[in-house]
Length: 206
Image 1 (cartoon, helix red, strand yellow):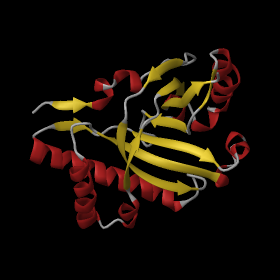
Image 2 (cartoon, helix red, strand yellow):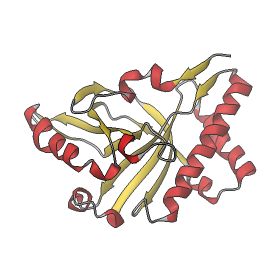
Image 3 (cartoon, rainbow, N blue to C red):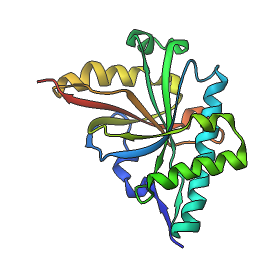
Image 4 (cartoon, rainbow, N blue to C red):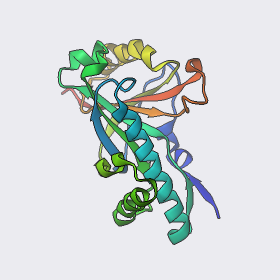
């Protein structure tokens, strides 16, 4: 049975070069998602969210093999990040942050099966956070993205360049929440080598 790798299927969405800001037009995508708030390093809900997302995603993967006879690599964890006052976000006052953690659902899997995967995961894992998972359809449209290598806490200068220099120079403004895709497993990768796609939905400033 062939194993589909979503990162290769949507290669442009999951790749980039350090210091290079590319413009992409994204198709509509569907995700398992969990909404929360607070410092991800401090609030227990964050790790519970990640655990629930992976539980549902791996359950769905095995259901796909069983029912559709299609296997795939579970896509990487993603996150949308913002704050009610964006000054709190840029100043990295993490206790005031809001977040939506997500894992992509392959486009060949329907909504009914994805919801059934959450139910099956609840029956097997009994994780309270699974009850807060929901499906979201994300239509970011045009985005600007780049690759960051290193600590998540060192993203600041890259994001400052994006918002202060790159977007104005291209006649673009923000049109959605800051989006991160975690290409590396932080449990197995040194902080200096962590790879993260930094993405910003945009629209014309005109």
